[in-house]
Image 1 (tube, rainbow, N blue to C red):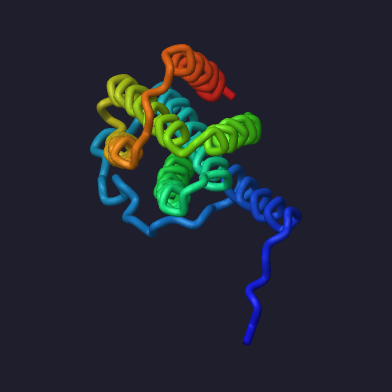
Image 2 (image 1 turned 135 degrees about the vertical axis):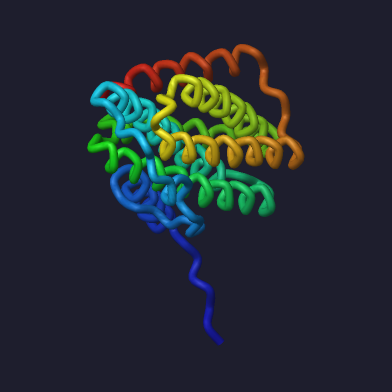
Length: 216
């Protein structure tokens, strides 16, 4: 009879480092869903200004997905209840879809990912791990509030996006639908309402990331 090997601290560190590297510079595992907008033939080519603006918005969204991935990984690492940990891992897998979609769209727009992504990953992972350690209801509440703010950002980007950029719009619309689902799932699982100062700090941090990632 084979014994199940218990993972050591070093094993966990290596696993998390591998996830971080894959998220920031690689191509992570996805749900293999159809890429939104792939079948669309855009009737009007984007101008240089439109292409640059779309790239900036998609770079922000890609950085947001890097942060979301780190948040979920950190929370899954410290979540106390198995069902909460499983929900975090499933959400992380779905967020990987968004990560890959945004990266592919950036490539098609002849642009680059944010060089600050490692910073966003480390910060979000730490926040997620702390939230998970405090308690599952607060961890889930953090997810719900994060997704609420992400949806608000997506609404803003959809309003700012050129009417000619149908491919980026299709990606953002599907992302918005998924984020709403993640928020609902977190609340139904027992997510608590976060204190207003925490929400405010999250909003400020999000704005810093948005402003910098658009350009860098």
